[in-house]
Picture (cartoon, rainbow, N blue to C red):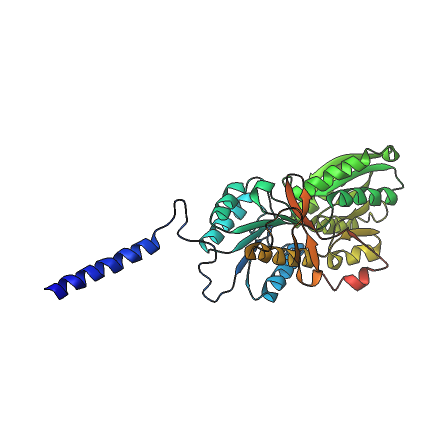
Length: 349
């Protein structure tokens, strides 16, 4: 009898200990980031704006390279259409997959905040790249270049092309794209300089980073403004679409074209003279730096605060700097591609 009672008491004590071990602290989620990584690999996810975008594909390639260099798993995602709603759905899916980090090229800097707050509350590190999230939605932003330098450089470029006189238009991505919007703000500030008094910005059009819509918007600009002298397209999809329209309509030399483009897509237009030159950085490097930034956040090597430093693989040491109310990491200045160098870059990206 005593042995039977002893056995019962022992069983009760064991069950109590197990229950105590499984008790959660107030507000603690039962599923924390990385719980599902039985092989010890961290899961780093990236969400680009939409599929079918060569710039985004190169960016995700760089991200994957960086993540796998560190022995971790890369999850690459992009919606069919560049909408905030589609990105929110993907964020929810990644939360349920218990990833360790989510890097987002935002379709809307504010609309993703509730979903990303949920991710951060689940222990997931959140950062943005290319097109920034608002500071409350991320730890740090990975910026391809100084926004002021991009905006001012694009105006300086088109002004030189059109002889500092005439009508110009901007063909942007989506109206909510934070990177496009801040570049456009700096373009407008550059135009305030009296030396551009003979240049008129007639319209900012939006092709939504979709090729067909960008083609239609370019055609509409040419129809609405028959005296148009220049187009600035700070989007790789938009500048390639505008290049095709200007080529098809035989407007080489009549309407100047510059902006941000992929060398592989713009080589034919630069070599033909439809675009004298354009600019960009290496999107592979943007993704690559993001992969290392995400891992540094997960490891706790950085917190996203100003002054944090870390080594981003082959890109070397990087330092986090202020970005308004948030923080960011700068890749570098925009690079100029023209007839003298496009051939050596067109097969790279």
